[in-house]
Length: 251
Figure 1 (cartoon, rainbow, N blue to C red):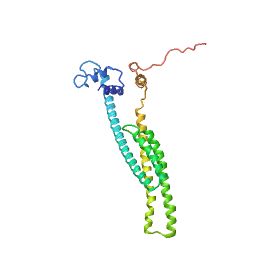
Figure 2: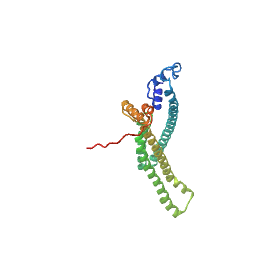
Figure 3: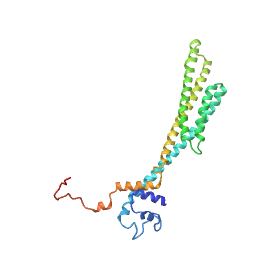
Figure 4: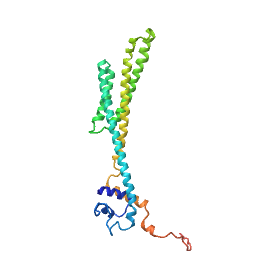
């Protein structure tokens, strides 16, 4: 409760620290004003209450948006794990079919994806996600190029000689399989890129703006001094122009 009151006090920009004590140790509910005396007696503290309520609403909206971002990040992690599982299955089929070079390339990409999932406990590592997005994009484009090459060169040459037969549909198996591998790798690379951007955003939010609490206190004091006019300036009247005789000082 004291942390919430201190946050509201900072948002309101109050100069009287006794208001913080009144917020935390009110009469019955802990937030009510003392009757007849204390920092609540007067219009200064009461006029700052709307500002404090506005700050509280902004804090609630920020918390809600943060929860939505966390839920979206969890969905991306699950999708990324499913895509990695699909790539592992395709890797086994590719190795069993005899494509050793392509399967070894997929294995190297899959290992980076596993590092991105298991490097940190309970979350995805942003740096490995960036690496996986780049390498997965390259590997997916290579498989897509291989699928087009199989389709446009080998099959087209066969169809030109003998024509299209029913058993020639089986020849489309390899181009279709390479297309599936490319699609899975490109989708996982895009998902890893989204996770990388989310991790970068969270790291920027968690990084403290000030190294120590003393620096934060000095910054808040300087900000209040520049943004709010002093009470003495408000109490003084308008500045009058000089009405005397001007004299020039000789060097």
